[in-house]
Amino acid sequence: MSTLPAFSLVRPTTLDDALAAIGDDAMPYAGGTEALVAMRAGLLRPPVLVDLKRLPELSRVEVVGGTLRIGATATHEDVARHTATADAHPMLASVLRRVGNARVRAQGTLGGNVCFAEPRSDVATALVALGASVVLRSTRGERSLPVEDFVLGPFTTDREPDELLVRIDVPMPGPDRATYVKYQVAERPTVGVAAVERRNGGRPRRRVVVGAVSECPLVFDEDDAGEIDAEAVAASVEPIPDLTGSEEYKRHLTAVYVRRALASLDGAA
Image 1 (cartoon, one colour):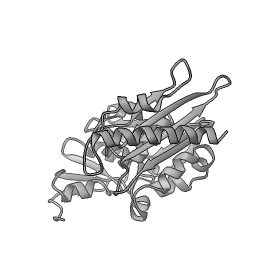
Image 2 (cartoon, one colour; image 1 turned 120 degrees about the horizontal axis):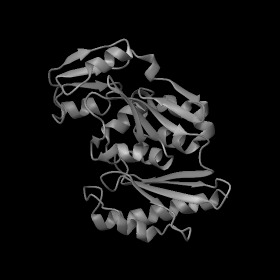
Image 3 (cartoon, rainbow, N blue to C red; image 1 turned 45 degrees about the horizontal axis):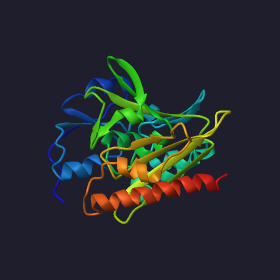
């Protein structure tokens, strides 16, 4: 692996200073588990890195009103261990405990994971299923949008260069039932499927989110007949053929793991 390209390092101690520092040529980072690897590979060459680790307000995990607020620099391990995550969103906690390896879980951040938009991210798939949103802030103001709309494609998000993802909001209470299943033989999953069921006082409604096989997580909600057909889901995804499998193989895996996710929901009855 090659050495890092030359860059300048800015270490703001206030959020206002961080917002003033980031821009087209200045990239924010915290854990660096994805960004530094991409820089060593020559895929990223930011002239300036803005270190967010001196901003404690960005690392908080707390419940505010009916929302689990996850600061952008909170690590996977921090969020998985938080009692609010375990109580309201055990599926998310389980996903975070299985991300990457021990170093990634201890150093990598949820904000960085979502912003990097790696197509095979377990985290984005789970957050979309849970209806999570990201909160972006700049010197121009603040906006919020669902993770589903934020991730636009491989390594591409709806974040302007002068915007900073400050937190991820996950609605509470969590779904009545939730599960995440994946098939993985390499560093990242070949397919990951999150499934949730919410009752809301009426007939249960289910949502399935398929990640890793396509360019971004794909959402499938129950039709009016109350069904999600695994074969129809598999036919709708657009798999990226690679060393982990062909397009046909990934469609097959998608159908298998959608069926397993739905069966897991049924087993939780």
